[in-house]
Amino acid sequence: MSTLTKLALGAMGQLRPRPARGNAAPKIALPAPDKTGGMPLMEAIARRRSMREFSRKELPLPLLANLLWAANGINRADGGRTAPSAMNAQEIDIYVALASGAYLYDAKANELQLVAGNDVRRVTGYQDFVDEAPLDLVYIADHSRMKLIPVSQRGSFASAAAGAVAQNVYLFAAGNGLATVIRAWIDREAIANALGLPHDHQVLLSQTVGFQGE
Ligand SMILES: Cc1cc2nc3c(=O)[nH]c(=O)nc-3n(C[C@H](O)[C@H](O)[C@H](O)COP(=O)(O)O)c2cc1C
Image (cartoon, rainbow, N blue to C red; front, side, top):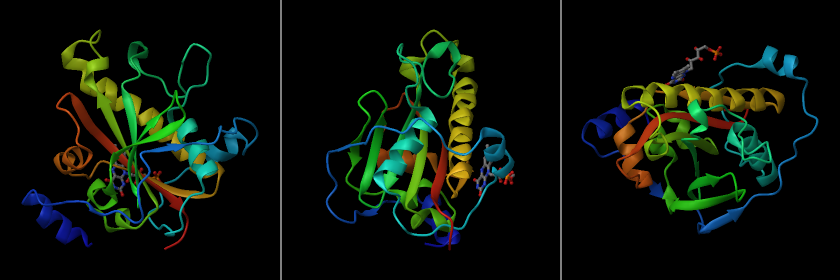
């Protein structure tokens, strides 16, 4: 769908998901992430950039599992995460929009939990490539986990934490030859509706990931 059509539908509150491709499983168990090796950090940083041309090819599950772990997985015995959060509130949830459905990444269980049994990808942003790229991530702040943080600061702290998650994804993409771009040009209400989010959940940013291509 073109950006213009999306903008028009968005203005009318009509930007909606498509039917899912295939049957969405209620849960997808992820393979254990491979936490070793990979491209040297300085080389990955040197390669980091935004790309907006994506192949439609699906990401294999082990690659998706590694990506999500790098993004905001658990990297310590005490439950600490790969991305920082103010007062360790861990308020950022990653929603994973695939052709087969939209899922919540549960880092502790290392699984994806179905939240919408349709194809939410087109709703995750106004740009046309988001519809067909294999993976659109959406970063959501669960404000119920931020009770110790002053209300006036919750939004900016959560945005900073989501930025750290996004940079993890950028570096993972650079290190694995994937394309990615973080996106703030999104219809937050449409996304919240499509994912069935409660009112204390704030839609922050989206990020598309896929193999490089067109
Ligand atoms: C908060 C934020 C929001 C952004 N929103 C969008 C967006 O909606 N669409 C897009 O294509 N790029 C978006 N970008 C990516 C920037 O355009 C990109 O990072 C910038 O042009 C620099 O390019 P580089 O990432 O290759 O260094 C965003 C970046 C940030 C940090």
